[in-house]
Image 1 (cartoon, rainbow, N blue to C red):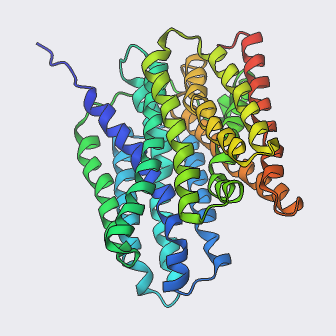
Image 2: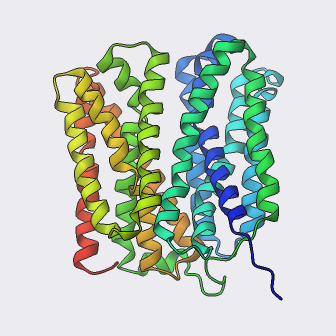
Length: 393
């Protein structure tokens, strides 16, 4: 008698995988002023940390798209190993170099490899499992990135309040225990291939497929719509509400991630009877409206409500775009998921950069920068209408 596979263990492993990604992406920025004071690293030089992180993640996305025959189990275990090593190394490695920034950037590079692999592989691992509601499960999966953001910000803030920020090395090692534990989960859970290696499409084959391009642009718009507000939420909270940075971090990125997590969890539990493309279209319209509310309202509190509302609006966009594309191009394989991750990261880089440039041009008025970013949810709605008109989904 064949033993039934327990895919609940696969879900747990992938959930913790996205929590791990949230930790490596959001914990180190909380330590920027610590690095500035303790290692005497200039604020300008600290900007290299997110730049290196996203550059390495983009490179991993590209390499995963280029090479078809990827062993999912070995690669996802590597993601957890590198995430744990990068985090734990942050506590010790900077002090071993004459220039501590070198040690920090080495650690960032190591855990960025893990983050990139998690982003590319966890979605197809879940997609390949025989769950009845794939779209809802994908949304629920991606909600754990949001809960990870909330957890790392609240957990770190609480730790620093109780034990002092000077003990940040201990907390770094504690966060590293999560990916370390998750190695066991990925080593033992059932993992199915999304398609057989011989059947999966290559990157060049996908680029030659005309129907693929609207989905790729959709993913760029998705990444930009989400990240433009997410990465400026702290500064926006400080400027609009007149609070200090600690409160701004809690009210901004933490509040935005909480709303986004709620939206993803709701769709994961209740969205099985909804048409995904229609739901995403209305979410894009709501996102556009929330950007306008945040950028044009003269009342600071209402502007901040617009910021939080955009978290609910963008919730379905990333997991929904993946579900739409994989359903329309079922033979895409690993290359498809890697290119979608790459496109989302490109949008996540371009969007906040445009907000920053427009904010600077408007004499540091963040609302003007967010108004410029409202073009991205409009682009997303146009892509969805195109996909529906051509009946690509």
